[in-house]
Amino acid sequence: MPFIDVKLSCSLTKVQETALKAELGRAISLIPGKSESSLMIQFSDCCRLWFGGENEGPFAFVNVMVLGSADRKFYSDFTDQVIAVFKKELQIKRIYVKFEEVPNWFWD
Image (cartoon, rainbow, N blue to C red; front, side, top):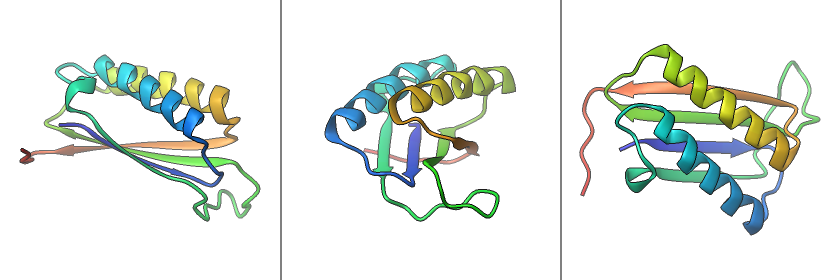
């Protein structure tokens, strides 16, 4: 079960949220064994994010948690797609994408 936690310094409309959700759902399949069918996403907008001592964003922090592990190449492919989507949809200036490999995860 992948979980993507998105923190944004800007506000997010429902239309933008739906577009990002769809794109993240497509992108997660770039990581072997992961799919939108088990993906959970959280969006938090209007966060007070700072980058390089500045808060004139918009900025994004995307934390991707996956059960198990994957080759760095797949994470890189995912990141490239996510960065392009966030720049297109929200004109994000700076984005961090972090991956956490979780050895144990339980869900229902």
